[in-house]
Image (cartoon, rainbow, N blue to C red; front, side, top):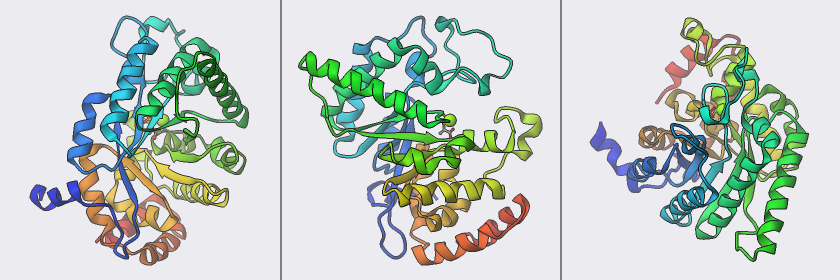
Length: 322
Ligand code: PEP
Ligand code: MG
């Protein structure tokens, strides 16, 4: 099996009918890069930068972050690297920030909410990303968006940082792409408005499932209720892709569902442009892609959207698997 999949480390991801699809990797730090490259990842669809802030005694300096982002950019050369800004809070704890204990941390002070409040931290990260942007193909992505205002505020701060760099004569890629995670039901419902503000969407199914189904993603007791196959989730995914495409932007997915072989015909049929996953899933997703033409996948997607329960969807996907 491993030998059969090894060919995909140097083979571009294509559908059966020859359409190129981006299959890229998720990383948490620079040490994860090698595995993505070895497994044939054609870029990085999600760099979870919060891990740079965790398990240490103090906040990483701008310089320290710059060095990391620069290394990743250089290593990936022309290939796109999506750097997600700090997404701490909830299950990702950073003790030295002295954040108050919360009753519902997943619904609390986290992600972009924290960054828009602690703008010093946010700005220092944005400076580091921008400065590193001239060493490769970097994009920036904001997590946990649930309103248009948050996107506008984040973009304003980003533009302020650009102006500061201009004043200091520090170089950066002026055309750097900006994207958002679509991982709250609110963001899905206003996706048309959000799409006008950004260059891309990346669907975060890990959180989207927990917020839509009201199922804590870390609670084992209700783990059987947590499923990407729930018809509500499939309809949301379809809507996100449609709204993105209507506005002319590309739509990726960096939640675990992107690496799920069973879901592949649905996601391909719905028009997903980029699949981002942990390194080990990359070869098998590339292999599955080669078995599906876009047209066949579209037909499956239409059928799957007619199904009414999680179980029906799962059974259908298992039978459809090639
Ligand atoms: C997600 O929510 O799907 C996601 C990719 O982000 P994280 O798992 O880091 O919350
Ligand atoms: Mg998330």
